[in-house]
Length: 421
Image (cartoon, rainbow, N blue to C red):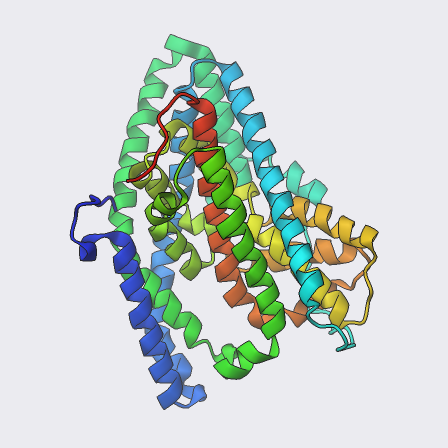
């Protein structure tokens, strides 16, 4: 929902979402303190329903938004060669920032050494199977494009959208009608997105209550205490990447003041934190980047869908930290070479992590087995995954948004620097 910066604070979306989260926190804590845990589910059920409805609304608009925005973004370029330069720059930038994030995570976890000395036994097999990286890349090309749309598969949808946009660009005037169709369809999709985003404060608050009252969460004090150092390692690494590395990139390369950009992205980051899904947050991210931060729309239309799928800075960092923690907890001493393998594998495996809650748990098995750790070790971190998932998803979305600003600068190197809203 687009709001003017001059609107009263309570009419601005990010403040509405923040208030919703505070109310949800108070309600969740009151219920946890006054109600027997066996009754949590009855208090949680209505909020779970509302939260699920909000997620469904977001998912409803994702594929249409990606398809129309990517196609219109590409067809607005001057020539196909411009797309090639843009694509190479974007993918190269995302790989670089993901590699930086993983390196930061490895550094933090080696300093704090969570799990050292526990010497736990490997948990029993929980049944998760990783998707081979070769299959991830093979599935980029769909066997049936309508099947890919129906399944909500991001990579195949982006592939089809790029092909369609490139064909329209190459056809020129022969495709004038289809060009007009996608332009108008994109306008309609953005209008529906505004309507859906008007419900975000309620939907986000409901999701947060559902998390707080999850019966599996157990005692909050014990929950945070048992995994404290591990969580500090993950959150500390995410904080360094989010508040040091990415702002420096934003300031030095995109020439945008980090505080202004962070304020503009607040609704998207709060939505990402509550939904733990970069894909579900995509409509909000697109709205914030283009309407609130005023990033070049052509850059945002191309970069953000790609980033929501392959740019998982937070997920890659989390997987690297979790792998070292699991190794420590199981009594394995990782060599420098093994940690280097973790860095590279986590960077690549993050590409295959779907933008949905806890998707990183599945791709983490790839990282564990790359250095000979049992894939079942993921069970050691499942208990605190939801909280960390919310944190790393916010970093994923923040990284996507910074990428859009950097690519926007790359496309328009002579534009004025952004110092404020």
